[in-house]
Length: 255
Image 1 (cartoon, helix red, strand yellow):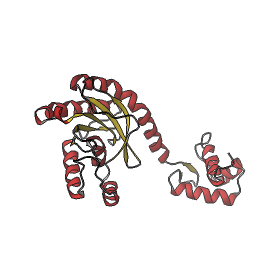
Image 2: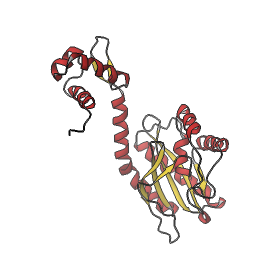
Image 3: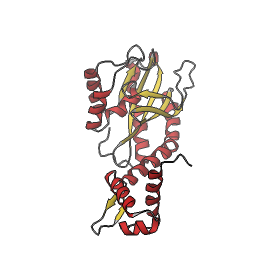
Image 4: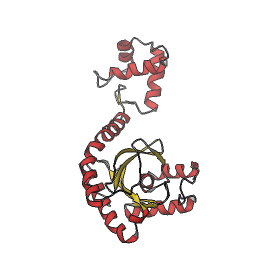
């Protein structure tokens, strides 16, 4: 407790006031919190700048919309596994391949759920695994649907490091693949994160029409040849749509 940053603790004290009061003036925050006026003024200014508080027309403050955004993210990331799992089971049964559920966290893909294939030859992944967004079908489908400014910043800063024998190492080619993935609504990879493994992936949308996760089928490349891909793509897109609808997606930009 002694190691806690005092300014952060006091800022949290101010935010906690809004649990009981929808709107507060600076003076009311000073009175209710017992924090000196100069400190309250300084902290409120910072909280407003970061979007945690917003100033109303009557000079009172209320919680900013950033809390709605964070709350939506937390809700989705808790609920999405529960919502997705039955659909993932059906997908595995139909496709006969392993199924992964992946989200973007800190510009990395993190695997938050998986179902192994029942077939003896398989590609192993684990929950909690991280991968770069440029590598593999499922991470890359998340990258493809980033807002344009975020994608440009990511491409500018990232160093494309080889992970397996077919990892994309050219930024111009990566941009071309991302554009195709976004247009088609799915992504395919061969030997990008692991040699002789392949995957097909599709994006999962939320009620705001934003991509919040990706779902993929993964297996040995010998089972992801051209003659099998069309069926796998159809199945993965169908599963992604089903999860998206359960998250409140209206299907305005159906994939």
